[in-house]
Amino acid sequence: MNYCSNCAAPVEHMVPEGDDRPRYVCHACGLVHYQNPRLVVGCIPVWEDKILLCLRDIEPRRGKWTLPAGYLENGETVMAGAQRETREETGATVSRLEPYLLFDIAHINQLYLMFRARLDSPGFHRTKESAQVRLFGEKEIPWNEIAFPAIEKTLQIYLADRADGVFPFQIHPILEKMKRN
Amino acid sequence: MNYCSNCAAPVEHMVPEGDDRPRYVCHACGLVHYQNPRLVVGCIPVWEDKILLCLRDIEPRRGKWTLPAGYLENGETVMAGAQRETREETGATVSRLEPYLLFDIAHINQLYLMFRARLDSPGFHRTKESAQVRLFGEKEIPWNEIAFPAIEKTLQIYLADRADGVFPFQIHPILEKMKRN
Image (tube, rainbow over all chains, first blue to last red; front, side, top):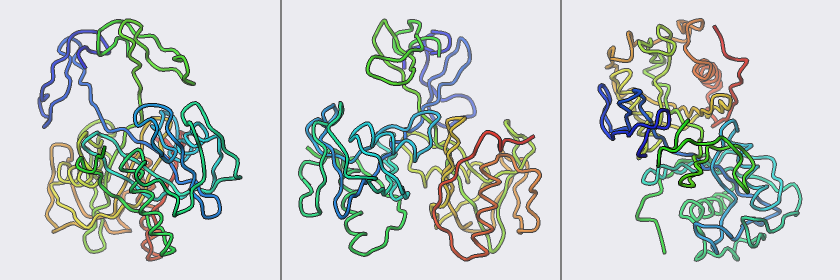
């Protein structure tokens, strides 16, 4: 951020009076431009005992596998966002969404909220964002080709919880050192 | 948003090519300025069977009672954010936080994530943001003087769940028509 989005004057990165951390401040119009973490919503779409993954056809991490997930939009509920991302990335519709995992990814100012979900039918297809979409059994998961640490952790926790038969809501951190490749 | 925060050129509110909703687009430097919902984190601080509320001394809703809560900051985990807001608004420290309620407030592009929490001691005090801070028994809750619909709903659900002895994680919408006063 270089300029005020309200009045186009240059902004200064400084601690405003009465605040305790630096913000982008416009001295011309007085606006303080707060910046906050962004929420990614997604799901684990399940058909029978298989999980739907998509092969990313866009950057970042093109050519790696992921669960459908993306930024929550303004005006959208978290569940509707997870369903929209699933539709956009896999062509599939999901229902019976249950909130499941929240990841704090503080070093990149992101949160992931992942739901468990059921595919309404085994209907899905490649999309603008996904070069391939397919169902994976537990032993077929391409562990070395997963796009993001939060997605790898989602799959690990889901499979462990499924073995136990319980899916408690949990919060986990994703730390910078977990970044791979 | 009137101007590009990167290059100060005027922005246009339009649907970018390949997108499906309007964004602020800068034709000079090419940046698309995405806007996303913001997350409020807070908690229900409990001491014995009482709940800590604070009387807001800042706008909006000055003079109304609320639970400690505020915007999650960049670089912060959701639990650390809820603890910081509690410290800032009530002077109290809380621990044993359990994720509890998520509110979709889509019409104002906000989410609330509320934890259950225990006060570490009955130590709290008025602060810059709170004209009074006090513990309320169930029958003392000032229902007609609660600042925000999400906070009122949090208290209602918590007291009902406490009567049942179980606190499942839940997602609820807050709709525009719930706005009061």
